[in-house]
Image (cartoon, rainbow over the protein chains, first blue to last red):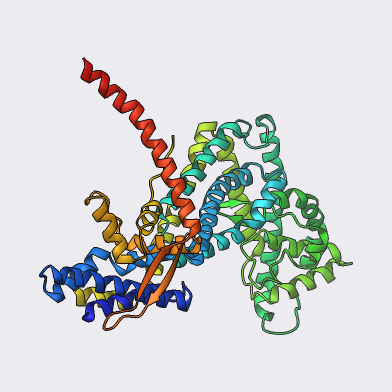
Amino acid sequence: MSRYADWYAVELDGYLRGRMSEVQRFEATREILNHFAEHVDDLVSKGMDPVEAEKAAIVAFGSPRQASINLLGQSKGNVIGKWLILVGCFMITWLTFSMGLVGTLAQIQAYFEAPIWNFYYNNLWRSWEILAVSLIVGTILTRKVPVGKMLIAGGLGIALIGVFFFVGPELNYGNVPKDKFDTMLTKWQAANNTTVLLAELEKSIIESTYTDTFNGKQFVFKDKALAIDRVTHEAPKMLAASSEYIKISGTRFGGYLAPPKLSKSQRWNGEDTGIKQGYNPTETGNSFMVAQRTLQYYDSAEEAINAWAESQKMYGRSHSLFGSIAREQDEFIQGARKFGMLSGPQLLIATILPVILITFASLISMMIIGWPLTKLPTLAVQTSFKRRFA
Amino acid sequence: MAFKSDNDALILGVLAERSLHGYEISKQIKLKSKGSLTLPENKLYPALHKLEELGLITSEWIPQHGKPDRKVYSISPEGTKELDSHRSAWKKFMANINSVMMDTFSRESEL
């Protein structure tokens, strides 16, 4: 036997390393080497040149990669990998369906704090993590990118969205009856107007004092009297409208606004503010509740406004938070108005197209990532073998 | 009348006569079937490992001089039972096919 069989064994061993027990790997490689030796003897006895015979035996057996896939097909790692891929593909279906469902419900059903929405919202990103991890680990273990399964899963998810639209509440625009839509729109607009007023108040505070005193410890408002006056007179209006506002504002997901549903204790503990999570909530409606809480739980407007200014320090904010919220809220109202005017089929197209695009972009990304993963950790060895064998 | 043709049955069939190593099993299947049945070589070993795990065959390493060690497989009593059930299914399958195809053939010949 010459070096070809040895190179084959090295590459095969590389593919099997970490995916089979040491003993199994050793025995499988030895057994295949014996197979080559027997085949070579057979061919040489028929008059073939030994080196050519060895090449022919290797070609007849198939590539090291294919041999490893077949050998691993019986291993526990492969079985686990296949299950992980199934989990991943199931998640694709579920997420694709969820995206359509959430998109529609959050946009149209925002007025109501639907439990189903909260379930999807709270679990969606965790689901993506499960999807990614299971597909990546499954791909490594099975040495195959499950292109077909992923496409079927994505297609199934999109089909489920279609089913949802045709058997679901699309004709009623979610749970918002058509005849009540204008009334709701008026309420949302009133809440938006209040936010705009608050944005003006905040802007006046920022412009008069905030930038001057940001680096210092003390927050002294040059126009504090005006600020307190605005808070005293406008805050009650804002708070009165806040329950409506909170329902229609909230964290964005996939271009849609979605209402947060948190208990008072959660809000009080700052779980809604992002402080505990360590991110800047400037662009989220949750920030609104920082201010709301501050205003709600202090005894006087002066105390509240000082505390609010203190709470803004950590973000180094130099622009109007409520201005951002007002814009976000306005976008929501525009979107709701637009969606409210769509017919059922138009609504289906408006929602399903982005979902199709997102789904297939995700699948293609996973395939692009998955392909090199199937080559690990033997990419260099394989290239080397192919070059030498050529 | 279902009969599932599979590699496991072919392997058990050739091992029923005598113990063989992997390459010889592949060769015997081809030889006995007069070249009409070929078991893909790199699918042979996973099938052998599976049968061994199921206890239908057993194996033994035989050291060799100047060549890698040879792993020789033998059929186990459980494997013999499994082969018998494959044979029964095949006989039944053949009988059913014959009753349909050969009956038609006989009537056509008479005409």
